[in-house]
Amino acid sequence: MIKKIVNTTKKAAVIELFYDLVFVLAIGKLTLLLHHIENGVIPLLTFAKFLLILIALVKLWIDKADMVNRFGENSIKDKLFILVDMTFLLFMCKMFEKDWYQTFYNFNIAFICLLISMSLNNLMYLCNKTLTKAEQKILILNISKHFFIILGTITGLLIGSKIGTYVIIATIIISWFAPLTYFRVNKHSPVKLEHLVERLNLLVIMFFGELIIGIVVFFEEFNLFAFICMIIVGSLFLYYSTNFEKMIDLHSHSRLNFLIWFAHIVIVISVILVTISFELSSEHMHAQNELSHIFVISLASIGLLMFVTMIILCMYFNRKTLQYRFFDIILDFAILFSGTILEFIFREDFFVVFSIYAVQCFALALHILIFNHNRTKKMRKVIIDTTK
Image (tube, rainbow, N blue to C red):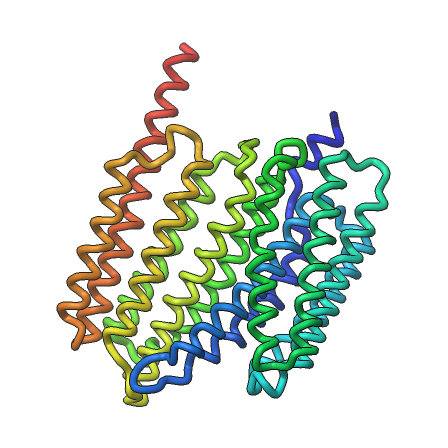
């Protein structure tokens, strides 16, 4: 019984946060691909390449984090495997600075080495004789999935970069559906929700750090635009942190807990899209680079829509009294769509566009703060009344 309690109250280890820093560095290097503007927009192929590599990297992070969540003990062996994984990840992120077809072989060799390291880590856990059948099944599924990706990547390397790239991408996309096979065994070997949420929170905070770096350029002079940018970032952070810090039920034992991984993939991508829209806007405003206003507004609006939608979906894991009602959901989406329409109407003036965007974000943050305050106050009153 004691062992079970310890496992369910697992905390994120320092080495895991160290690994997250390298992962965020890799994503930061990857976003440099999106700074090549043609005819005012990011070329479709460049954007597709960015998304596909991002999905591959996020997939690696999720696999590693899920493995540590379920089986990690913060032992010397665990730390060594994480350091080895970081080494190969650094090789991969260095390749983003060069042409894809020139680094195709080196990138994918590092990718294969990383997968082999993760497979060996799974194999190490599998040797533990105290595992349940459900835990053994998850580890075998992980090893099989990594072996499948390794075979697909080797096949792509043998075919060559032009066609092989698509073979590797197809392999990774197929592997994304592997966690669906966990649904049945997840009841007997659930993820440790407290550790999961802590890891995901820290990861998202790091990407908010990237967003802060993206708006620093607006703080060169003491002006209103800088304050508007800070309102946007602060409001987005409050909207996220209020739900995952104040409202989520960390003691939930739902078999669907692993879906929080997938929601956070979209949340991370959404924060990246908002960051890119800020960076492209700053380059346009300071260097007068050619940039389509419609494109930037679309990028920021899609990012905000994804961000809000995923957090509302994650409210399924909140305490029942702290889940948005239908009215609250409609209100948030009304704020989103009305603001987006106004942004497109005033698209020629970036100051007005960013001001509307700031009002949108502030309204969303204010809504969730008021909702949480009122519901929490009501819950406390009920508890006091029942104890009298």
